[in-house]
Structure formats: C-alpha cells, structure tokens
Figure 1: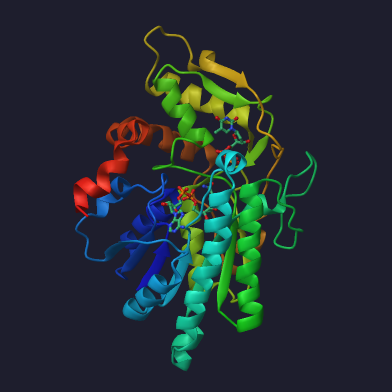
Figure 2: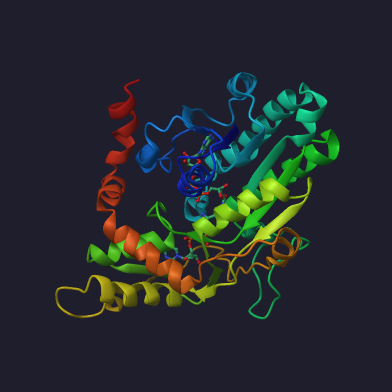
Length: 352
Ligand code: NAD
Ligand code: TYD
C-alpha cells in the first residue's frame, strides 16, 4: 500500500480518486482535517476497502512512526500543507508549524521506519514530496519559465515555508540516503477546490450574484494545470522518477487573472445565464492588491516530458469548462463548504 498525507484536501483527494480508479493498491490517508480538509469530498469512495482514513497531524512523529510500523507502506506522498497565500500573510504560524516543522517530523518518522527495512524494501521505498512553483519566486514578463535548476527565491510566507520543506526533503536524501522525489507544480484547478482560491471563488460568487474580486489590476499571470493532469504526473514520477531528483509539473497555460475570470464568466453566460440576461463580467470588481503579490509564475515541464514521457491531457479551455460544469452540478458539496457544515461532517458521520 501507499500512504498519502493531506488526502482530504483538494489535490490529495483528487489523487486518491485517480489512484483507486486505475489500480487496486490500498491507500492510507492521513489528514489533520484543518479547515481545508473535507471528508465529504471522500464520499465517493465511502465503503471502499482500499481506502483507510486516519485523522492525524504530520507533526505527530510518535503516531506516524506507529502507523508506519503497522501498515508498512511502500511509498509516502506528502500533500499535507497549509496552502493558501492570503492566509499565510495574515497568519504565518500554521504555515511554519505544518509545512516546516510538520515536514521535519514526518521525515524523521519516515527515516526511522525506512532505516529498519530489509535491503530490497529499502531500495524500492519512495518519499514523494509535493511542492509548488511558487518557491522559485516571481518571473519578469519576458523571463524564461522556471526549470528545476532555477534559484529558490520565495516571496510569501507560504512559498518560504514550502521552500524550507523542499530543502529539508533534499537534505534527508543527501545526508541520510532517504529515497526522495520532489515535484514542483504550477497552479492547479478542478473539482473539490476550496473556495478561497481564485477559480472556485469566482465561480461560486458569480452564481451567488456576488462581486468577483480581482486583486490589483488583474494582470498577474499564473500557469494553470487541471488537477487530474497533476495526479497523472505524480503517479508517473512515483513509478519512474530518479531518486533524489526534482520534476517541474505544468501545462504551459499562462493566463492573466483577468483572462481567467473573463473566461469563467463567458462559460457561465452559456451554461447558466443570469436571470437579467446580462453577462457575469458585470460582477467583476477590482479590489486592493495582495501584499507582495508575485507577478508571474510559469513552469518549464520539459524534463518530465523528456525523461518520463508525461504530458497533460487537458488544455485550459477544456479543463476550465469541465471545472465550471462540475461546480454547477455539485451544489451539495459547494453548499456544505460555503455554509461551513462540512466541518461538522466527521462528528456526524464517524462519531468520536
Ligand atoms: P489543500 O489546502 O486543499 O489541502 C491540504 C490538506 O492537508 C487538507 O486536507 C488539510 O486538512 C491537510 N493538512 C494541513 N495541515 C496538516 C497537518 N499538519 N497534518 C496532516 N494534514 C494536514 O491543499 P492542496 O491545494 O490540495 O495542496 C496540496 C499540496 O500541493 C500542498 O503541499 C501544496 O503546497 C501543493 N501544491 C498545491 C498547488 C495548488 O494549486 N493547489 C499547486 C502546487 C503545489
Ligand atoms: P490563488 O488561487 O490564491 O493562488 P496563488 O496565490 O497560489 O497563485 O490566486 C491566484 C491568483 O489570483 C493570484 O494572482 C491572486 C489572484 N486572486 C484574485 O485576484 N482574487 C481573489 O479573490 C483570489 C483568491 C486570488
């Protein structure tokens, strides 16, 4: 079996669905269930004997050590993190605790477990750390997309904490020989994305007749990847990635924020027109800019394409259309998230 951390979050849950849809290997899912962890997301695999959920903090080294000894996974995929840049600006503490100290404790638990394995198990074991393109900092408008050898220049408390975790993972390989892999991916979007991030905020605000908040002038650029394509890249790196290496993951879909929001409005105008017949673009509202807002991210994913033969299947046009349609069709999930009732779900569903 494999062990996934943060599997009740956006990418982790999508990864578990993707994994179980194509193979029978069981998944242990360890998640602290912060505000971003949502067990309702995992309803689709309720009762599936291949998925075992355990509520735990990656910072709880003793518990992790006992779980590793009991379940003996062949690989760990570390998604667990505080992930929202704006929250990191207003309250960086949790970002340091989970992304830095938590990753450190996880690495130590894994190292203890891994050192005691028999030689062949030790050789085939993998620790895959999921990271972000934001560790590379902000690109100039004409700068070449980030490659794996770009300098780390994180600018937000979020990206600085992720950069720190990447460094720890690297050092645990270099110093102790832990068989690690790291992926640095661009902005993801798709089903089950928590509505604090741009794309779900815009879709849900639009249909709730609320303003569509664009920070600053909306000319910042992000490189968007459909979440299922990120999942296939992770599977590929786990399967064939070279130990100790980093792989950048992206879909070459650079868009300004204003373009992204306008595209969503156009799709909504078609799929669920406003009652007054006017365009959702009328709800666009320019608001104060994010402090220290990175201007541009873009990923050069050619190493992953060349060495592991990975390619994304969705373009931004196909992926964003699927995403908007998913939010329109899954109102139960979005209502639970926007009203906060999803937070009562573990107690209601699992008792203590
Ligand atoms: P998310 O915020 O939706 O989910 C994070 C999950 O981790 C939640 O379920 C949360 O409960 C859990 N978690 C948080 N702290 C924990 C702790 N101490 N112990 C155990 N579980 C904990 O995040 P996401 O968007 O799914 O991102 C997953 C990973 O991918 C993160 O490491 C993030 O940095 C990285 N990443 C995200 C993006 C993106 O666009 N969302 C892009 C590149 C990389
Ligand atoms: P976000 O989804 O928070 O991802 P990240 O900051 O990790 O790239 O934001 C994507 C872009 O959209 C970013 O440039 C900030 C901007 N943004 C807005 O303009 N309005 C919003 O309400 C949000 C949440 C983000």
